[in-house]
Amino acid sequence: MFSRVLIPLGAAVLTYAQSVTPIVDIGYAIHQASLLKSTNTYYNFSNIRFAAPPVGELRFQGPVDPPGNRSAGIQDGTYGPICPQIYPNWVSTGLSTTNDSSVEIHTSDDNESEDCLFLDVVVPEKIFESRNFGSGSPVMVWIYGGGYVAGDKLTGFNPVGLLDRSKQSVIYVAMNYRLGAFGFLAGPSLQTNGTANVGLLDQRFALQWVQKYIHLFGGDPNRVTVFGESAGGGSIMHQITAYGGRNGRSPFQQAISMSPGFYPLPGNYAPEVSLQQFLKAANVSTVQEARQLSSAALIQANSEVVSLAPYGSFIFGPSVDGDLIPAMPGKLLLQGSFDHKGLTFANPAIANDSAFAAAIKSWLPTASEAIVSYLATTLYPPIFDGSQDYTTMLSRVALAIGEMEIACNAGFLAQAFSGLGSRAYLFSVPPGRHGTDTPYAFYTSGPFPGVENGTLAMILQDYFTQFAVTGDPNIPGITPNFPLYGKESTVLNMNSTFISPLPDPAANPRCSWWQEALFV
Ligand SMILES: *[C@@H]1O[C@H](CO)[C@@H](O)[C@H](O)[C@H]1NC(C)=O
Ligand SMILES: *[C@@H]1O[C@H](CO)[C@@H](O)[C@H](O)[C@H]1NC(C)=O
Ligand SMILES: *[C@@H]1O[C@H](CO)[C@@H](O)[C@H](O)[C@H]1NC(C)=O
Ligand SMILES: *[C@@H]1O[C@H](CO)[C@@H](O)[C@H](O)[C@H]1NC(C)=O
Ligand SMILES: *[C@@H]1O[C@H](CO)[C@@H](O)[C@H](O)[C@H]1NC(C)=O
Ligand SMILES: *[C@@H]1O[C@H](CO)[C@@H](O)[C@H](O)[C@H]1NC(C)=O
Ligand SMILES: *[C@@H]1O[C@H](CO)[C@@H](O)[C@H](O)[C@H]1NC(C)=O
Ligand SMILES: *[C@@H]1O[C@H](CO)[C@@H](O)[C@H](O)[C@H]1NC(C)=O
Ligand SMILES: *[C@@H]1O[C@H](CO)[C@@H](O)[C@H](O)[C@H]1NC(C)=O
Image 1: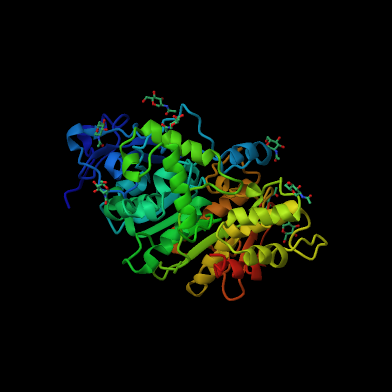
Image 2: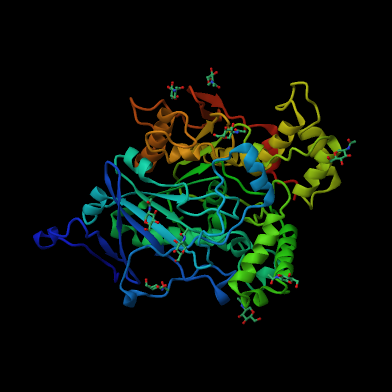
């Protein structure tokens, strides 16, 4: 309502064309873009504050509107720390042996701050120039992964290749969201004086920001596609089912959920234990006391708790209630998964059957002995003769934890939306592991880390951007046909040499068991 766009127009300013980039007035602040050049020109509106700094009394609470900052003048977007973060030791240790390209370890000289709720808007010049005409262009919103304890909107995710491939037909947005204890405290003691899953609420707040403001950049709030990988994909699963669909329209219309991952936290027990661990590490006994501490003390406490997470766990993450009801209003859902996706998470130290049962017990601390035994003897029996989907102890562990945390989720989504035209792909390019498809999505031509087959990367980008633009990933005559998931549970298998349909490996009795959440 109070917003308008300011942009130098007309002959008078042409002499400044080299140095003057567009300015957008979003009402509570004014932002100027920097230029991003490839063969095309993009405007990089970076680090727009979308919520108030979540510090002091606002810690462990849902995001609120940012304070007005017009008096500060034009923001150039250079200020924008990443959220405090740390990976568990088992991830950092495992990295040296897995080369997991989805994992970015930050060093201490990166700027981390609790004041991290910023988002980027990257707009193709031609969209920006025509922003006052027609209904606007489609928008793709990236939600990064990192186990809900790490990651940021920028590192590793330069959108230029994807935007080039889209023929500059979409706007790219990415937000930071709170991580670890800052974003995912939960449990009864928190909920008496605080809000659970605020990291997911940050994402949603940013999506609502897009609804309100993206028209100022030439975007159409009614054509928003969210996409994300791993914890980003898992976040999307939660955003789709948020409020069981009973809280009005979703702030997006389409989703690409790449290997949706989260650690099942079905009840109060585990979140409460994690909360108490965190408070203890901070040397306080209530969240209200924690709010009075310095940022440095809380960052230290978060680091202490997360770094010691047991294998496969990140301690903090969305706490689900087992009541995940698909909520997205009548649109496509495109989801992805790939072979052996548990491998990053498998604990090589699990060498025998009793260790396997002990591991299950640690994954699902509230599960009964009967459930543990059912998992260890019936769902994932210790039989390595080729009759199961694994032939070694390591691949048995990988399959169990992979299906629990990731692989089955993808199938749940595709099945839930199968009547609504969902599609699913299986990314089995070696090493066929967690995150392998992310560099393909952000590919720019030329040698690119994590991408062996540039043609395949461009096809994946075509599917994504065509889906964002038209709702159907297929570009007739250009891309191999991407079939509907349908009743046959067909997925599109992409390996390094070939793209072809396949029955969904996640459509199996083990996933059906996980879906019923009998382990609660
Ligand atoms: C307002 O803008 C100034 C100048 O860019 C910046 O230093 C300050 O942090 C901003 N405050 C808020 C609340 O955004
Ligand atoms: C956009 O600008 C910010 C601030 O200058 C910079 O940190 C970021 O790298 C730019 N984005 C891209 C994709 O280059
Ligand atoms: C990890 O990457 C390095 C460099 O690309 C390569 O030499 C090494 O074989 C890779 N290791 C694994 C386990 O893939
Ligand atoms: C961190 O912030 C300082 C001061 O604002 C700046 O000089 C430095 O370049 C930043 N480091 C990174 C990695 O962004
Ligand atoms: C949390 O507790 C403090 C005092 O203990 C109180 O000031 C504050 O209003 C409470 N917040 C909520 C959301 O209940
Ligand atoms: C908590 O107390 C211990 C022991 O005094 C101290 O080593 C630690 O640094 C404190 N933690 C924080 C976050 O202040
Ligand atoms: C099984 O593995 C665990 C952990 O590696 C070890 O402590 C235990 O001794 C092993 N048991 C047998 C029977 O080999
Ligand atoms: C890729 O898939 C095709 C068709 O399913 C198969 O024939 C081929 O062996 C696979 N290639 C690799 C490298 O796995
Ligand atoms: C790359 O992938 C494409 C699409 O599947 C395939 O046609 C092509 O042969 C692959 N290139 C190589 C070198 O394997």
